[in-house]
Amino acid sequence: MISKTDNFEAWVSDLAPDIIGVTESWANCDIRDSELALEGYDLFRKDRPVDRTGGGVLLYVNSRLLAAEVAPFSSFPEQVWCYFLDANNVKCNIGVCYRSPTVDIYGNHNHDLVRDIVDKLHSSQKHFLLMGDFNYRFTTWPPLHSDHNITVDSSELANCLDDNFFTQHVDFPTRNDAILDLVISDEPHMVSELTDLDLFPGSDHKALSWKLDVKSVHESNVRNSFDYRKADITSFRRELQAVNWEGLFSGLTAELSWLLFKDYLEQIQHKFIPLVNRSRKCDKPIWMTHKALKAVKHRRLIYNKYKDSRHPAYVKAAKYASLLIRQSRQNFEELLAKQIKDDRKSFFAYVRSNSKCNIRVGDLSNSQGQLVSDATDKAELLNDFFSSVFTRESVDSIPLPAPCFTGTANERLCDINVDSSGIADRLQSLRSDKAAGDDNLSRRLLKVLSTEIAIPVSLIFRKSLDTGCVPRDWRTAIVSPLFKKGRRTDPENYRLVSLTSQIVKVVESVLRDEIVNHLEKYSLIRQSQHGFRKGYSCTSNLLSFLESVTASLDAKRYVDTIYLDFAKAFDTVLYQRLLKLRAHGIDGVVCDWIGAWLKDGRRLDWRGAVLVASGFQRSSSGFSSWSSSVFGIH
Image (tube, rainbow, N blue to C red):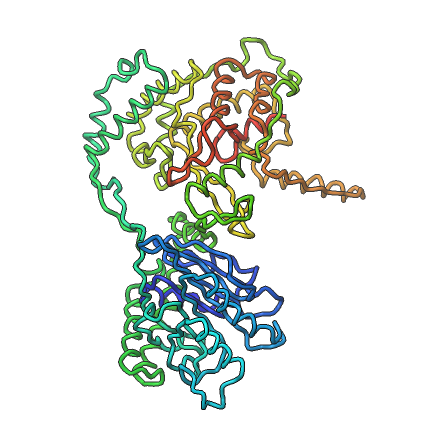
């Protein structure tokens, strides 16, 4: 499958199917999901479970159908299943399987397992469609009783389908003169307009296409967003400059001041920035030219006309389409490589798209082993798991660190200077291509109006420091659970990725720089610490380690190395243990503000379901630009 990715993506771009089943993927544990993923589709896969090459199945479902993986209905080794909800909120199960004709892989028992799939589907009364390469040599369908070439196992499968009142829809040869690929459903009129699309390049089986008669509900792929290219920035800037922020915030708390500022900013956004409907649909892969896509469509039309893959017109069209597909990918990647110095963003975006794959959270298993499909219940399961990793201990028993700051009281870092020009510089340096946090303030807007926005932000930050009150939006993160590996139904196999407010990242960076400067000035950080320090990095740490190892080897001394990896180190540390700052000369409103930020936080997922309830012990993972400096103090 990996070697046919270009042609596969071209076929999908031409046909735009909602569901795609692939057999004999030849995928294994060394092939990542990202190498098989298609943009706009959720991928479900099952590799061959034994140490033999070949086999494996893939199932792609349009992301707008919100499909979720389900456990197989039998112990047949090479099958994968998912479901989506139709318009009546009924589960429609979709499966793909592959039965190897090689007996020594699974033995003759494999035939019984195929029939067991059919029996289990009937007993479960599932609404389903099953497709796959069953490798039973039928010459006609329904099979004729007078056909002496049909095997006993093939006949038993046909009888099993009849006994369970299931319908098999393929009635023409899919490989040479045999019907090897089957499409089975629990309703006779569920499949219509079934036809072949000729041999897939590099395969000896015909690809099949049909319509699935299910009234589905698609998630909308159109969203409203601000069109910043047509924004009236001059009027926007003039409106902000006319506001007396000091008078507006007078007598208000930091929380109320922030809400007033955010609401005002949202109002004038709608006033000076037009909305536009944006579709997330992608008509073709980014590397594919329109000329290549047109050639692929022409190849399909030629085959539909002659239905003969050896016809000269089709042979010519197929060769031309394959040539353009190959050239499109090659030329695109060569252009990216040539322009990498001037356009690194495009290069690494393309690399990331081929190395990462977002997997939708499907049904999750609760403590009783039951599968949970409701979105709120799944959020609660994830909430329970991520909350369970927090360390709970009495704060009275936490040991106090020995003081290591030897300066005077005036040299302690008790407060910082909040300068609007410094905040403006940081806002100006924001990357405009990053997503907004829970406050919905775009980096692009913050960047272009950095000077005007810096004034109210600096006033709010000053209030926040003086009162020790951190605005709620600054403590809120949009959280997405990302699948790591293992069973997708296990909540433990997900990790959290947090998206926080861009404003709070800016004010945190101000605080972080002051803390690091203080620690560096009074030599409170060991030289062995390489993280977060200016001029130091993982590379410098490795070079330092390599130098010490080399010196020991040159001196004829043995070197033993032990590598430690602390599981969930940032999530399991009590925030009270992080507040060892006073021993390092950091006190006053600075220490109080950090304590308030760590003490109470909220996490929300992208749908708005609370994953970790308000008031949970905040971890430092993925939230703060200065949390690493707190951990770095020894």
